[in-house]
Image (tube, rainbow, N blue to C red; front, side, top):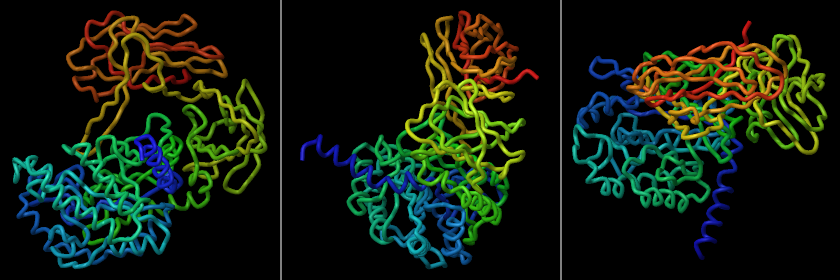
Length: 565
């Protein structure tokens, strides 16, 4: 078989194996291990941040950490309860940590005695019980595996306090523990949906391919996550806590925790609400991806009560609105101020998060033969009309669901949508860095940072501008004329000085301003309200550029138009 044919066959196989994943839309992540037993505390000290990194943060010697296993006895673990919770929430697959960075296997392993069956009084294989229950209930069972970091082994990555020269022995660890354990997962637990690798570290491209090929050899339909490393994998996992900034037309997954930590921490009470989770699900689906939501089981095997209650409410919403989620594709529109959109052939699902005060929903730039517009829950038909190239839908006086009320637009023939962003009447409109047309030397870049250990944040910024020729320009459409404040959200590059800059509108209006000092970190974004402009009806362009910057100009994250009321 020549290379071209092999590549083509690989693409076909990848498409076939990924179909279930692209239709599923919603999965449960579970971080569970010895760190759950410690619950964010070591020797009476709390380690704020993500609990599964406790061994690393406290620099716990391997010999001391092993003692933790002798009292790990999660007698409240019940696979039926876990799967029932995920299924009732509308989740279609479960990804659970088989081995996290601490090196402890939550399954029976012949490759290492540091596992839940051999090293704890529990003596059961919870992954086997969970896999069997998932198979019975029709959910995909999937396994997380940390392939590079292993703080328990001399050759595993990450443990510099016990093994200062561990990189030299990685090859031995890779052959004697990593690969054998992955084979065990692929051969002892029935059909597996995917292997969720993490932190490839110093792995070579050949080693990443070796893991990919091993998975496909033993389970041809099993997916491999992109975190296997080196641009290898069947689908893409975004960064921790990263919402996609734009539509992604290849299979991907966004992953978030229900609270702040992935592994259980007893004092972490910062829970996301059902409303926030429903809207996150829809936003991710609207960009074309899956939402993987993490729950951290307790050390005794019970699920946190708040997670159970919250997931039930999410599941209640999904049961009524499942048509607008499962098997859908990405939005047909640019960013929608009032919510988001998912699609199927011949149907648009309009997810309304913010109910218009006048109970008239503007659907911007929609051009197609509409058969009907209805409320998805209950099927009530809604009246609609056309105005300035938009479809205007008359809504009931109140939302039928405060989390997300879904409208379904049934249409025939070709669907056409104006790609230009529309300002909604009386609403704030935020335009992001990736929405801009850049000129001169200006570039966009993604930056990531932690505000608390493990609490990753992400932003796309406009940077590399120094002269009037270096600009970022946004095009938008205003159905009606109005006055708006212009607000920039930016941070200051390190050691830069305050500089003069211009906001220029295509109707010759200008706002002149001097940048503010936001601190010396690129992540210190601050809003800066610049002034008021008159936005005419129709298409408008708005540009931002420096006036002869001496140093690097601002890191611009977004431009916001706020009604001047």
